[in-house]
Image (cartoon, rainbow over all chains, first blue to last red; front, side):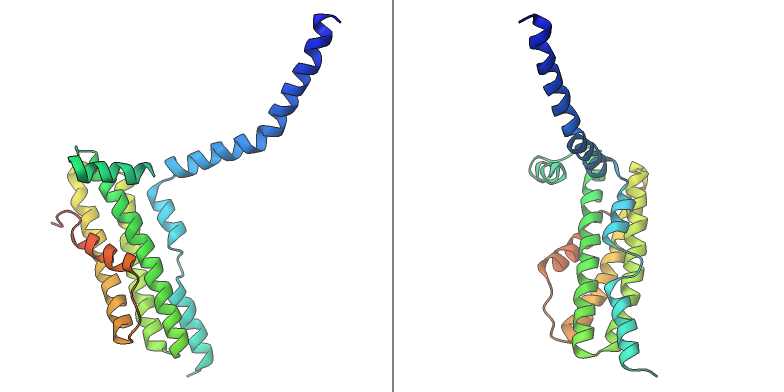
Length: 67
Length: 130
C-alpha cells in the first residue's frame, strides 16, 4: 500500500471531523462575542425589556376591572 | 465568572483605576437583575390580589429604574474615569425606584428577595453622586 493510499482516508476523516465541528465552533465563537464584547447597554436591554411584568399586569387588571 | 473573580480580588487586595469600571459594570448588572425581579414580584402580587394601584405604581417605578440603569450602562460602555459619578447617580436613581417597589410590596406583606435588598444597599454605596 502506497503512502498516498494510507494518507487519503486519514485526510478524509480529518476533513469530515472538521466539517461536523463547524456548528459547534460557530457557537463557541458567537457565545464568546456575546459574553465578552456585547455593550453593557445591550445586555441591560435584554434583562429589562421595554415593557415589564407590571405593565403587563396593569393591562390584565384593567381588563378584569373595566372603568 | 471573570467579573466575579475580578471583583473578589478587588475587594481583597484593592484595585487600580480600571477597577472602578469593573465595579460599575457589576453594579449595573446586579441592579438590572434586581429591577427585573422586583417588577416580576410586584406583578405577581398585584395579579394575585387584584391590586391595580400596585401594578400601576410598580409600572412607573420600573420605567424610571430601567431608564436609569440604561443610562448607567451607556456610561460604562463609554467609560470616562472623570465621569464615574454619572454612573453612581444613575444607579442610585434606579435604587431609589427599586426601594419604592419594595415599600409597596412590604405594605402588602410580600416577601422581598435578598438580591433586591442587596442591590439597593449596593446602589446606595456605589461611589459618590455629585
